[in-house]
Image 1 (cartoon, rainbow, N blue to C red):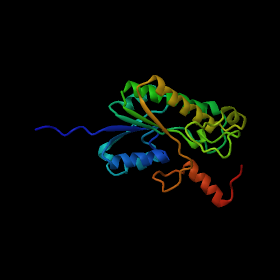
Image 2: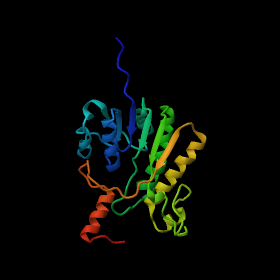
Image 3: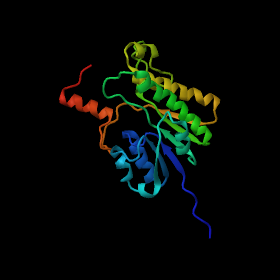
Image 4: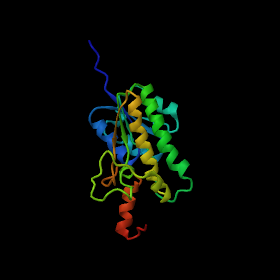
Length: 219
């Protein structure tokens, strides 16, 4: 009697976040075995993942972060695809942007792509941001934004918009990586993400929307 064919495995980095949680839920619903990377699988903020339908039999959480290359390699082992969603999103003031934002986003993306190559992953989806596209005061206002549009790095630095700076560098490096690698890499650039939450903590976009509703938003 022949055994059942092995289910396809995929990994989602930063599995406990807003977008990543919905990606995990969708993948589980389609019958995939899902590996998810989180800083601490026992943390209450990740408990919603274990309650998803089919999570008990098809979801495995790996304790690692973007700067832990070996941990990423372990999480990607046996996977045919990786959704690289993890990236720090600032909610309050940033005291050390290089350590808090830029290094995890940029070095983290390098580690993810390198670990994907080692694991012989077939396809990588890098979740970037509209912030990597739209922050450029010199772009003609009547020009549609497309794949040729990038946020201005110097302007991001001058305005201390370190999140957009980090996402711009990370995405551009990911696309540059495709020129010297056999990895099939695509990027997506979501803007504000609103809607029902699977996790117990507020995501950055929802907090921004809430501040507008409460009249507490300030530039």
